[in-house]
View 1 (cartoon, rainbow, N blue to C red):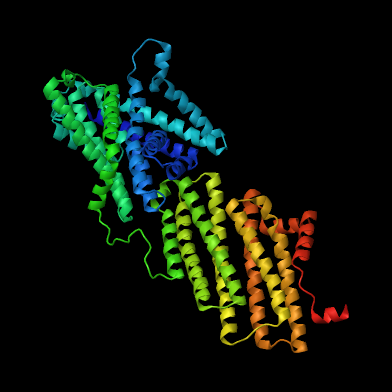
View 2 (view 1 turned 45 degrees about the vertical axis):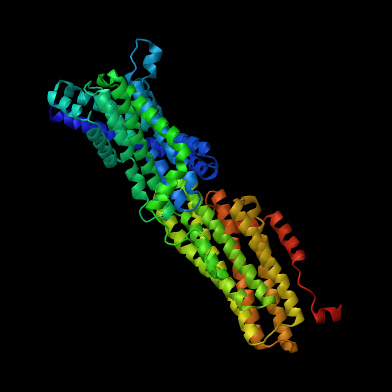
Length: 608
């Protein structure tokens, strides 16, 4: 084996690893985050969790990715530790699919059908189709499918290149002696663990072992401990992802390690004890790619079958390793006021913005929307609470509004930063549009919460100065506040449900709210002249109406943003001009005018 063979081998390894990465990326995009969402929602039973872990891993072709995702879901509080155990076990089973696909290259027959089943035969066809999809298709799904096809073709090309490069090693006695050393269980286990830890992919390290099997120098006895070590080495990725995470997330990563370590020890004890009693003669046989796939599958199925009933013990072992600092770690702390409880609850909700999910843009985008919906609910609640303070003021109520406004600020900081980081990833067109919508809307949510605090401060000023509006002004303000409540409710529902059709109802209501603001100012001036209102109350009323109007403006921004996304980026002013000349728009304006008509003033009643 000369220097060119070595270069060819490493080149083949590069193609192999890049092909695996392309397949994983394409499969993840094609699923649109749906596979990852399955892990969140359908893990109620242990067997179901195992099955889901296996299916998701088989489809995304990476047990490390599934495990890291699981650690992230536990960290964000979306999964319980007991649910994570089953997924982790299932991930180990799902990763065996890759070894079976790679083993197909070893099929030997003159039959055309059998020959076509060999990946080396059909992967060039997949490469041609994949390139065609990427070059000529504008649809995201076809392009993602093209990435998967090209990834698979590269993977098989890389494996075939490695096999040809290492073929001369079969005639090198020193190479055979090195591989014979790995028949020692401890050395083989360490070698497998080290290789997998370095490349952080058990599927890739198993593929490399299958490639070495093509030299004919690898025996079954050497392959067994190496495969055992590979299962332990793959835990490194999850352990690294657990750094800086919550205690339960670190426990989930440790469960992955303990499962593989305990499973390996049990399997090796049983296997070598059986060899001592029954003398397994096949250990000296030459290992094939299919042999590696069989050993890999039997180990993972056996380990899961034995350890699944004892999953609770694995949890306890992880809990003993990572101890809680206090017994109330996952519970509520007594003596908290509403503001601190809300802040704590929101911090827990913000954990779904886990950096581990950035590698899965579809899932990360879905979590950003969940956080944004929660932010929208808080902004709406803060306004509703502030409006109640105008009727009946209390310091506790003011504290609630202030706490919600601070929490919304926290959401804007955390969510905005996360969205910017996510925008740097390779996103599908749909995810990119959703990201743009969220980035626009969270600023409006934050400003709405600011206006709610302004309203609460106006209510506090009136309370402390013992001021009160006249009966007429209170009645008018109640009508105006009702319109603000309704536009807030409508716009937040539109945002949560992504309903572009209902979004068209927001702007006519905003138009009426603008008119109400003008009417309120005119009426105030008339009351001021009549001496039924003071200048000081006039300033407060003007402040309130301005905040009401600004809240409606931000609601309009949210609705228009959604319509823009639906209309593929129609310019804001262009849409508003077009909408206001629409017959349906005028009908809705008239309907809202009748609904939010201000009560008649005393001078109007007298004239009537």
